[in-house]
Image 1: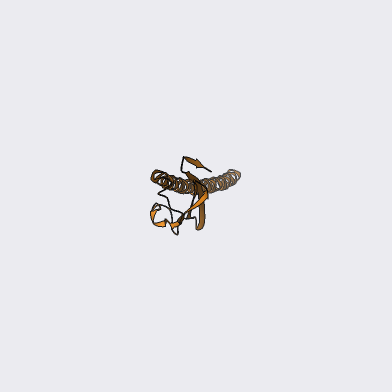
Image 2 (image 1 turned 90 degrees about the horizontal axis):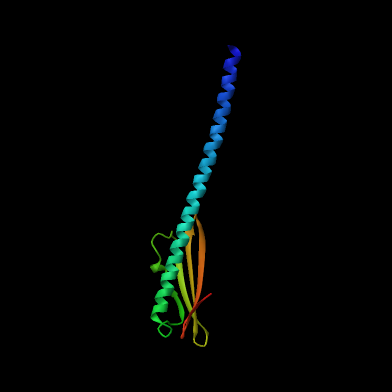
Length: 129
């Protein structure tokens, strides 16, 4: 009987250790998944905002879009974490073509993350870069 109790104690300890390793592994997976999910959401929001902004500029047309830099932070989606900022810079790229550069910065896990978007608006049509 004495050896049977010792064997059960060792089995119990091994089971607890294996269970703890599994729980820690699952916790790590959940944390990684949560981080990647939030990162994906932020990227989707930034991309959607940039696309909407560029389409609005295209709708206005070449002549209605003025050259210069504009702070568009107030237009950013509320779900992007603060601190955040966005700028729109329009330059005359060449004759009949304007270059539009959007820069969006937001907080991601305590660090700033910047996404940049460039497109061109022409008198005769549109091109992307």
